[in-house]
Image (tube, rainbow, N blue to C red; front, top):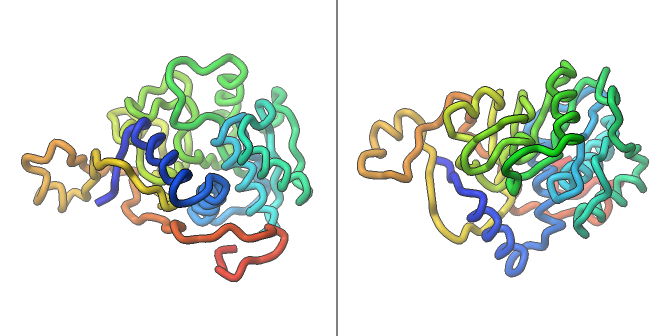
Length: 255
């Protein structure tokens, strides 16, 4: 079975983990590493980065891709607003990653796009400039990887008025409840979870395979049936330490 949580539980658990167990910069690195390990990356990758921590995951991913000799660039929707995101944005720049503000047409002719625009805190309507980027991603023809959640999808309900349609979504820490909602599969091609070492503050839902669900779901309102697009195999990067410099290969072998 796989854990499934609400956005508020994720927020509280993330905050507790940072305060008591693992610093936010390391968690951001692990989120990017889990995303990197979820796919065999090839060709030029464009990372569409927002200004929050989801964008920070994108800058960290740019560092890892560059460290592996994979060409990438960042298209940004604003300067990083958090210290951790700013750290990885600066590190990416020092590693030679080109960052440019989004402009119409800049997502054409790329093999892969990493969607790092909006995170699990999003709800409501996507603002106009972000909606333009989302629409351009969706018609790009590139292989699209959404980091943590498809930008524009609400984490608790799965509601998605204007949202990225991904080939692959890498849920960071845990699957979010909205990702299992009816209709979520219209936006998520394949879903995989990366365990980054979050210490969850409460148990909420668990996703079971069909066999497990048929055997164990009775009288368990917290039991959810695995959607067809969810890969039950978790990517475990929960104990990985962030290397001192991404231009040097760490001893862990995760590069």
